[in-house]
Image (cartoon, rainbow over all chains, first blue to last red; front, top):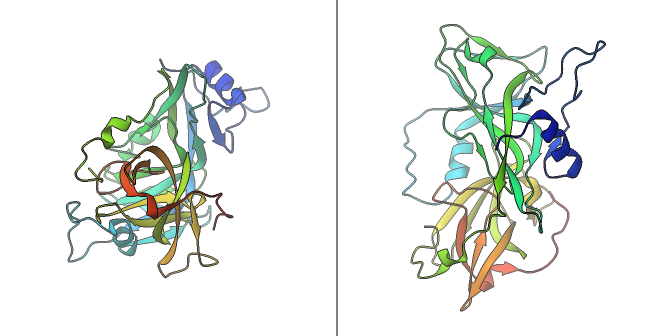
Length: 194
Length: 98
């Protein structure tokens, strides 16, 4: 079940959902017309780092384990963006970015439910052809961290990325039952990574 | 139950992120990116070099000198759980994050 904005507020107040910094204001007012909360979602902002993967004479092969994370990092460049020096995402270019916000979906002992979430794009960005993720929207119960965005510009024109711009929306869902990792995975396991 | 896994740590793709490389009980290497809050390094900080350190893991099951642990993120190789030998981890409180 997807949480309404009211239920999201409750989850934030009860510590079942942690978003730091917490998006504000919760409600629009005359003096502050914009609230990052919609009826059942909350906007997340773009962080101030963009990582640009580079090509080369190599191929990633996940069947060759070991140090893949290190290799990816070595073949990428991370830049810091500012309001004065935003990043121009050109058509058909792919970059990684992160949300400004740190997200936690704690699994609390004794609770009959916990929360999961999905990160989705915003229609106002999609009209320019901007994808903020294309394969990994799920935020699992127990997650802690910023959300990595896999961004690509499928539009015909360049698009400027600025820190703190609303870039995605988080949709929070209730998971019925408290999840566990099945220890039976351990039984008879030949390849621990498998 | 939490434990600390011996591993190799280097810079991640973003600030406050690290790349972690570990080895399973059967000698298979795995790697993943995690927030630096989940690691403890032997050096004062993670610079450009790869350093030895510890990764915070959650022990899910123990049996016959081995244990199933949940890593704080998905590995590139496959999944978030791996099997370790008891000797690969320490049960102690984590020192300050890097």
